[in-house]
Length: 170
Image (cartoon, rainbow, N blue to C red; front, side, top):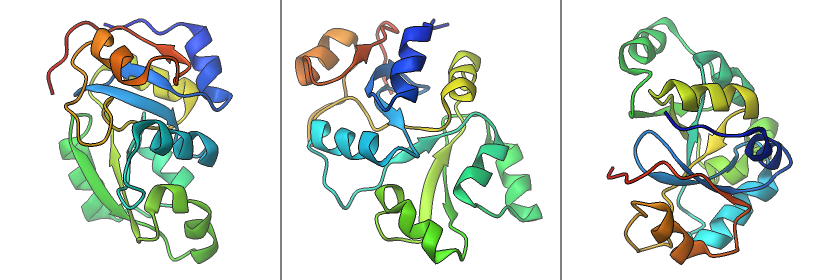
């Protein structure tokens, strides 16, 4: 279990970005609904602006923050697959104004990918911070960091925190 202190939670809530272990790899994380944090991640990672990011959520009801409408069939599928390291692409609502307000997530498409991670510590963190984007901790085109030393080699002082979760292989 990884321990995340209140300082990291405060940094995230204030729009900061950092590196922490996720359920699959080290992620470069920031608040999903904070456009500046998301755009900073794109810049730091040198990520292609067309590529969307996965959003980590703590519980299914977090989907309401994105105005995602869940029908019975979708709910059944989500119950079957989550929590697990499985991303599910969901369609956005018909609310064009809201969808435009989350352009930083949907990149002009009508879908967003979500994942409810299996580790309890990570879901607890997400309950405290709100949904996070979490692309892999690497520069575009490079191999994902498998440890904090590799993440620091990629990002040096361009992020606000590092949380060490040991060696990770996705």
